[in-house]
Length: 167
Ligand code: FES
Image 1: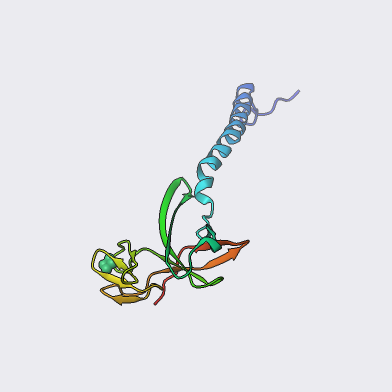
Image 2: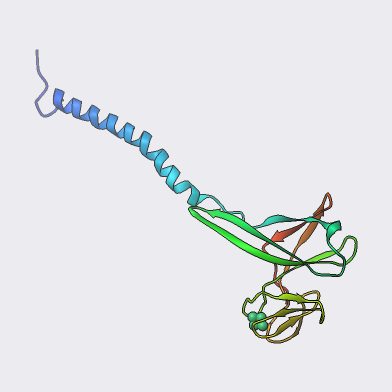
């Protein structure tokens, strides 16, 4: 009987090495791939930036007087978690028409408040004044208050994040 030349013969030791490496690779892949997926997948998920936020029953909001609402939106973006607070003024014009304005001054971002006596929103930082519908009356603000799109469903008023700029 002829034996194969020694250079092409697979020794028992080499065979066991090969089997060990193959099994080790399969085990590493079985453990490693789900672990990598667990670590990476949150960062790969798409973040929803637009959101409808319920503010409450429209009929409970007084007509012609800005009503202040605040809420916090929590978001997860990959491993980053954020919480953003919003303040808005809801101006109900009549039974169905409503507009919602941001309380952030368009000059340098101070928070405006409603001054009933002069019927203006006033920014305390540099005396920026806005009318009932957020239009600039006086001071340094370069544009009106930002506004939110709204919808009413089953009597509940919703606003859409983020707000939009008016010029
Ligand atoms: S930040 Fe409002 S007027 Fe300057």
